[in-house]
Length: 186
Length: 136
Image 1 (cartoon, rainbow over the protein chains, first blue to last red):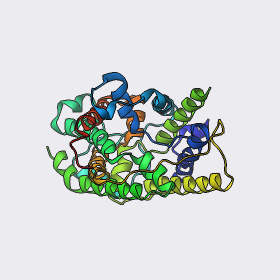
Image 2: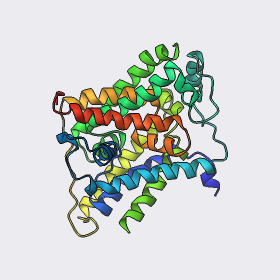
Image 3: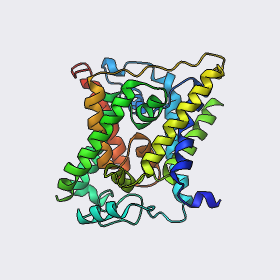
Image 4: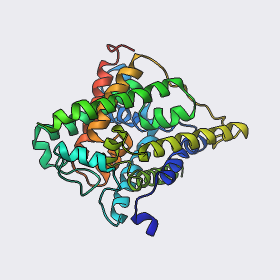
């Protein structure tokens, strides 16, 4: 079980993620993608009376099973990791974040920004609730996320997915360099 | 039976995201600072392996389970690809998580990410309400 107690290098993780594209086509004739489940959950639970949510979400139940699996798998993985500490992050990134006021580097996520307590702070709310909202709104508007566009879409040579991915990175770099320092200063 | 396989694939995916540090907020910041190859290696090798595997499927004319020919649905290009893409990028930098990792973080006991996930579902809900009015 040694393999499960440590972090895996990119050349193990990446190729295995890539194999989900052919695997889901072979198994279900469906494309790999995660953000469409946000729409399924709205359609299934909230039944809003607008055209965007009027479709047969039950035909896509497999996606909901898949994301439930992700949550379970992550729970198991976190249990088997010998140390929940973050991996070998670049010293430059750590120094920059430390200068911006991030204090907790003990696990994969800084508790001073993302915890029940941080939700009582403006910056915690902006990052958690604001960030989450943008992820849900943006991926549905763009028609996919990192899995559907960046991995499945580019692997199947779709121009829209290449453009979407460039925009994901443009938005991310802008937010990290320009917006995040201002939020962390709050 | 298919659902059991899908559930197992999902479970292993959650482990990949965790052991591969894709759910690490620090790894995502590092990626946007261009300070490390890690995330580029993960995504780049995933794309290359996925693309090669799809070429093999096509060359061997493999069919999906059940016998139907494999159909790749085209991804539409419209104004939302750019506007939505930029907005998602900002959310990705804030939370350090794209949709897969949101489920993973919520499942692995980072409580605040339960709310981030609910907020993402809310974001998709608002998009659905505005769908007809937004430029596409």
